[in-house]
Length: 217
Image 1 (spheres, rainbow, N blue to C red):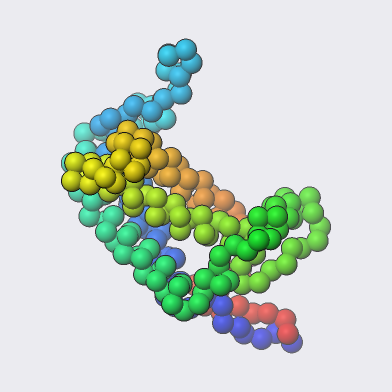
Image 2 (image 1 turned 90 degrees about the vertical axis):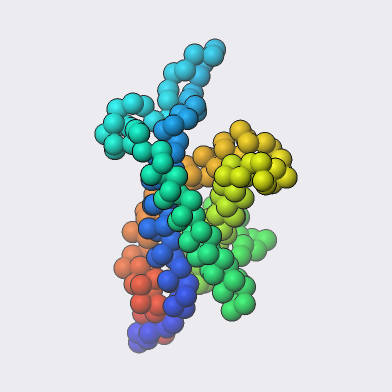
């Protein structure tokens, strides 16, 4: 017999969906800022071979000459990104949701089994609670990444006023590299996350929208 079972509280769903447009705006405005100091390349023997964002990419997306606009959007929406993350973490801690979210001592081993199952290499389905082992690892990592983005972002936003934070991040240049790397991590996470949602099926998606799932008793 099929029954309806509560899965995701309203605040968890709210912060999850709000995070998507916020991250999209932050990444987009970050590109507008990065254009003004496009320094990262893949080099061989000191000669640039590949630039991360070639001129045709910047021109196609109308990125050049929009530095002030990018800074305005980035520095405004970063506070919403911070507050949304703080709300999510606070609710997760005080509601006890962290118990089903944080990885345990078996999660990293079991996460590999989830990957093998998703690739159809392993036939047996791994144990699944509210979150499987791979989700526990990935969702905890994204929280740490968000924290890292806030810290490194503040370090390069106010490197003089927050000189101690900039120093803890390894200096302005290294903090900027970390901030840029974390942004690439968000994009990769989003692609993998969408693929996992497709693999998991409609019930998993509906649970994040409506808050419940239909299960066999």
